Image (tube, rainbow, N blue to C red; front, side):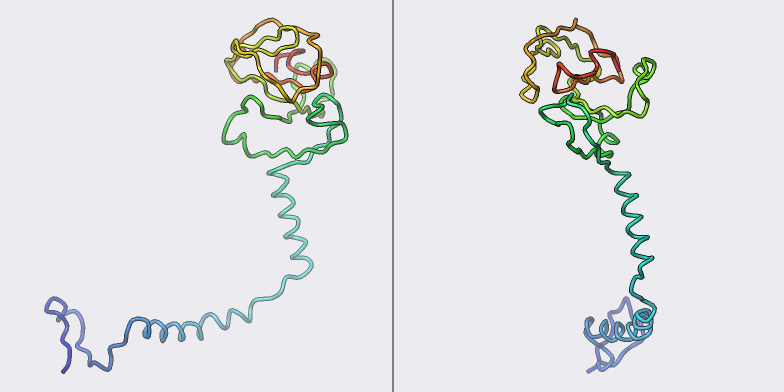
Length: 195
């Protein structure tokens, strides 16, 4: 007994004998085998193994891509000791600050600000410092103790410095951060010039 299409579809599809009906997966396999033979197999012949020049090009692209994301820096001074010591190498990744602003506690790499360039510091020098305050914060130092927004900071990462310096309270302007080296007695940082 032949199966007739439903009434709504009678005018849209031609009647088929039961022998013409295949389960969906068998029909898919039959059409896939046909496509595989016509399109995919000839394309395998066009594939080739990468040559040395292709490997070099890939290496070059990966090198340039990684240089855009991160940079290895040599630590030249003791201003960040004990966290970073002279001779250490540190990786500076470059992506984070595209999505957020620096926050307190971040260790950052930056080129010499214009104020220090005017004092004779080479413009190609890169500083490594810790952000201790962000825009709008009130910051001061009393007998070596850093105070941000009236709260004394517990800085377990700093070198012992013996409370030998003070700094009057100030409010950071917008678009400025206050940076200090972890070795406070041996660091050229925001205490010398607001960056």
